[in-house]
Image 1 (tube, rainbow, N blue to C red):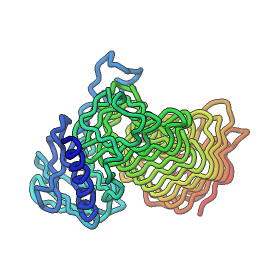
Image 2 (cartoon, helix red, strand yellow):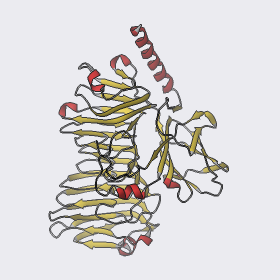
Image 3 (cartoon, one colour):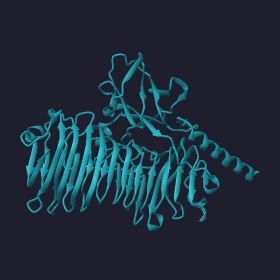
Image 4 (cartoon, rainbow, N blue to C red):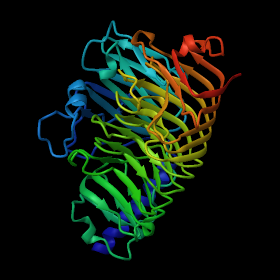
Length: 489
């Protein structure tokens, strides 16, 4: 009977895989998950309530003195963001889809905005508590209702149709309702893990060196973290349409996905990383790829988004962070098609914290929905270099936009007594909004031995004005020290 059941499950998986390959819309209904869901939003697609999305809800952690993992200053963000919430849902599609949103309150006189604004998505109001909009492209979208709508934002993740889901489950270890004893059930001959739809709680899972594929099925909710430690744990792929949540880890218990000590070639694709309280993705090896990964629900400091070292690519991701959104610490890193939301700590792009060396990096098509800085401290800004002691050379930042005003852009003022080379930077096709009422500066401050050299601005707009030599001081409110060769095109 077990053999028959296994064959049936395998056949069903193959059938569903072929079926979904021809579909234009795939939903991931929850499977009796004991996971908080939204009491504010109801979302369905194509005017069909049978196409209802599961909308999850993440609420800012409640602060209590003496929390496990607590560090100094945790009370500050948890007090500041108290009662803030994120409501989010996801689906996969191709072609065009209409999204209908019902809100559990009257929104008659509220303006509705959908970011990124570059897509110019139009909203159609359908009543006192209902509206719709159409998507003809995949991506990550933020829906805000009214002036303070960002405090209870609705995030819609519209992924491409999967084309790499496992087909032959005979080659996979299929896992249902996993717990923290998962490691003991894995055989040396196992190479691939398949987390079925449903609830799992694996704790901090150290991936065995024989495991090279981890698939999280749409509708699967995995509490825990994945750690690849050592060169033998290279070339691991973590993918699917499911969720990896830190909701049952204590503060800073673990980075959510980490590769270290020579673990290279990690691939992360398609999953949601939710409810985290440390790094979301920390890949210290080379040759990594992070794509279509959605990161949300980090409220305390140390909630960094993505670090992926030399020769890595980060693309088509959404990153919510309360520390650095993306760290660019090694050579040949490519970042493209990213949507960012920054709380009040950290930078969108951090160049250096301690002796990093990065050359020949390219960043393009970045949409910053919000950056909630209230200060211009050393680690804030769209681009920051916090400490000295490293090298940043030959960078291109192209097509970077803000949807809402930020306080400042640049904090290139490395601290410390070491030299810091910042050389050959091109900022091309930027379109930035600044709130001047905050009276914050932009900093370009090198050292006497290593001044900032050849900083080039090409079609760089701030509040609609093209930056040039004559208006730079007025537009950017700059503090300039030990810099040479600014260029404007």
